[in-house]
Image (tube, rainbow over the protein chains, first blue to last red):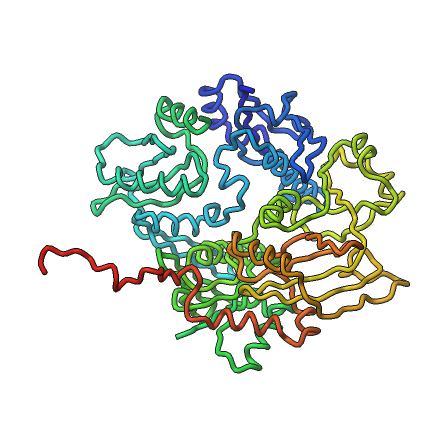
Length: 238
Length: 322
């Protein structure tokens, strides 16, 4: 019971993230095709017989679910869409039934927390935590097929930074001192604990009036120093 | 002051039914009609920490100004890529706002979201004390043949929230079990007996009993008589469990499907967080709409009404300057 699996839509999806997870857990099973999955049964009484690779699902130590294996088709047929949806929900039912394995970011993967999955909801969560957030205006010319998105403030390139936050640690892309971030990170960790999130990525900008956050994405970005990221991934699995 | 907003498609029967009810009762409300995006020229969405402003042509909605919102908010094909993208952005913005606004919301988008996975959903039912039929997600054809039988005692459904006509497993379906290698599917032990739909609205249960010969009474079948519908009561323990489920899942409105077995046991099939309640309401004399209106015209949401037993006046703030 010591293997970690990463489950994703296809082989091209989240490749840098999978590499980072492999750096932390060399025995990681990479599941990116439906042929890698075998769900024999999941029962309403909690019994599960399912495998990823050749490993029994309920004997894994942890799972990073970044999506379920699906068709990479631009215009799937009705049957293909249905099959993809049924596979995804079967995978999630199997994961939900495996009570003893760690599902990283369980709150986003299994709880159907749409508030944290929509960009608009993310900004409202950040604002409630105490972050300054931008206002966002989307304009659509519905006859002319023209769409624009404006953020205020729109950060200048040199002000943009990135945080990957775990429940106890965090790692930042930039190195300029930013003590104003510390209390915000602590409050974000409290939110994450409450929302059953183990690791989140927050794009930020360090403006003259203080830090501004632009989203809180359940999951990791690899655009931060690798050593710190590895520690956060180790912590997320526990 | 109460200010009610309805968000949905004016062309959709349940939405227009409730809108027309409020109008007939003289209850003031405004409507953000998503179906107008089929013909509109401009859409602007402005989001900030406590506000969402939606402008469709000349109609402007400041969503933070509403005290109560009834939402049937989902994506729908509008016929062109640009309009579809615009609608997708708008629905996303609405979901983000409705999840976090202090207003009364029927229902918040993540309330009752477990319904999107029928097997995981059964676990949630159990947690609230609702009995459910035995069910299996099966992806192995050989194993399936040892669990289910083509004798009408098993029901076939989708695992996901995609609306599916539930049917009894017969010889023809049994012969197709090899297709489970393509994707797993859900099999549920069939409960024979009457159906009951319980609508829970703000803690009140309104129930209708349905006696039908077909497995899924929502769909008519040639040669089978139409179902019989009649108002009914709900056993106190089932009522408590229904309300407990809604409380645990922050739902102010739910449509809960039951089957009553021959021994009188009530088995819950599922809880719908966005019930299409119109036909039940018409037969029940608008009781559901009336209860919905009562919830929306409350002065505060349950979550915002946090006055504790020890009131603020008994909790003076210490000051060194007295």
